[in-house]
Image (cartoon, rainbow, N blue to C red; front, side, top):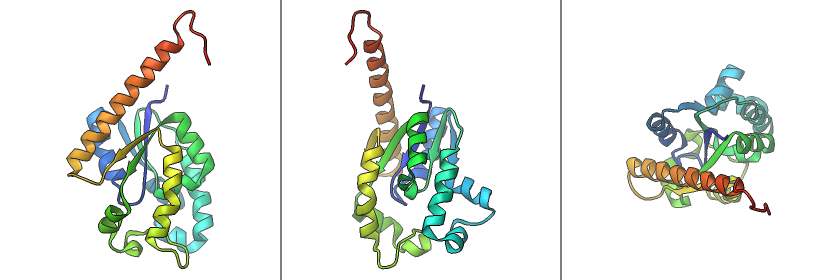
Length: 186
């Protein structure tokens, strides 16, 4: 049974902020994988990035995220985790992936200065370019999508809790259907 919730989305979408509160409300643990990366490497993310570059960082990010062993946890990886195939395959296996979807305008307003926020942009890449590059990956991996543009943080948390509850009920219903005697599986 998938007992974890994995929050994906752009930087500033609310993965950590919303994740911590959702974990508290559901009686779950909270794991920020950026902190696990820093702990393993004994360096800040920006120091790792400066030392090994974007490709080296993605390799580390993939290894750390793919090795997360957790139950009953809300897991908040960095926004670039969607480039890490093994990590995302692992997350899909151990949990329900929740995409906190914010419009580009919302992300731009919340981030203001991508460099200070630690958003890694390739040479000549804008925040807009990064947003539209990652959006299809977020959509691809999401089991649940929650739009987080409007309202206060409390509204977003309520939306997430409601969406998770609906998803869980639907999964339980599908499981009951699949176990119905005489039902042919497709």
